[in-house]
Amino acid sequence: MTYDARGAARGLPGPSSIDTLFATALLPGMLGVVMATLASGRPERSPGWPALLGFTGIFLTCHISFGRGRRIGDPVVFSVVAFLSGVGLAEVLRLDPGLAARQVGHLALGVATMSALVAFTPEVRVFEKYRFVAAATSCVLLASTIFFGVEVGGARSWLDLGFVAVQPSEAAKVLMVMFYAGYLKDTRALLKRSSRRLLGILLPDLSYAGPLVLMWGLALVLLVFQRDLGAAVLFFGVFLVMLYAASGRASYVAGGAVLLALGAAACAWFFPHVKARFTVWLDPWRFMDSTGYQAVQSMFAVAAGGIIGVGPGRGMPNVIPAAPTDFVFSAICEEMGLVGGLAVIGAYALLVQRGLSWATRARDDFRGLLAAGMTSLIGLQALAITGGVLGLVPLTGVTLPFVSYGGSSMVASFAAVGFVLRVAREEQEERGKEEARVEVEG
Image (cartoon, rainbow, N blue to C red):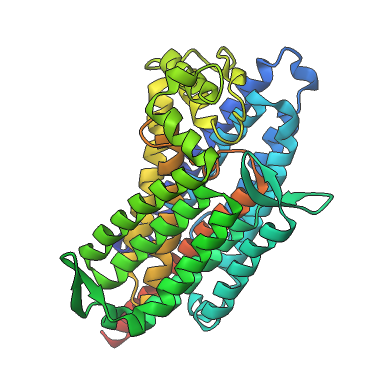
């Protein structure tokens, strides 16, 4: 059996198809950067050209280093990430050219983190041994901002280190997924056994679920003290997805939805900035000159884009405050239209589909749960911010993975993808060994 045939048997394209896929994914971002540079008014002095070289060099080096994508685990996932990163860089350059160089630096650090996880991790299961260390570290990171954090946008979730500001909750999310995966692997059989009911909802034995729920509750309490409710929603959502993946009990998700509703109501009651987000979400036009200004301008931008957009460099996304971070999707929809917005959403859908596919095919429970958790972390974050921009859910303040400007979020997103790619690579290696053994025995 040739390598191509084996790859096809595992749902992967052949070498030439991988190159074509990668080039196709890279092209929109490259063209976007070029058009944003030419539209800047002074293209000869624009930071777009160095950004273009940096972006292309980073992903091309990674592609070649992993055997033209054949040893990276899943070249489809890698290509999707390259597409999203390119679109994001083009929009950041368009919105604030001064941020382009930093964004390229964020991409370099993120790709390096992803590559290290894929290439140098002995095997994913090594992280299972440190699940409680990961949980403790996550809580320490979250607690650090309570005492030493600085407030940005109503949330006390940043640490100012002098030379750089970081958001510890981004790393904490990845570490908490590692803990969930390890603990749920040990208790998944017991979680499936339900002997109690509360309001018709099946409950697991608290002697096994208690420590997990306690750790989850501690993380949420810390996040509430931070007032970073976007991260709290992600912690909660990923917890429910992984709990369902481990137990198969839809009743747990139903119970979690009730808790989410109660928690949202409590937060809206106790925290003014959370109440403001719900109020603006329900009636943004009433507050269009104050707290609803961002939401209303975002809606105007999306509506102005129409089907195909007003064209690169021809929109006015700069009138939206925090456009490079919180509202970059609005800028994409304005200048690239419904077509561009759907392309971005479709890319996330494909990434989630591939990630969950590897999770379901994993032969080891820890690998499967880890892939499911990391995939849901990216998917839910993308869903939260795109839904918020379109007015479907309240704005949470989270960033759009790989697209929005921001170093902490970028590195955390690439780390999550790195774990998924490592799981995919290990699954391929094990299947390859089995196929080789069958050939020898045959």
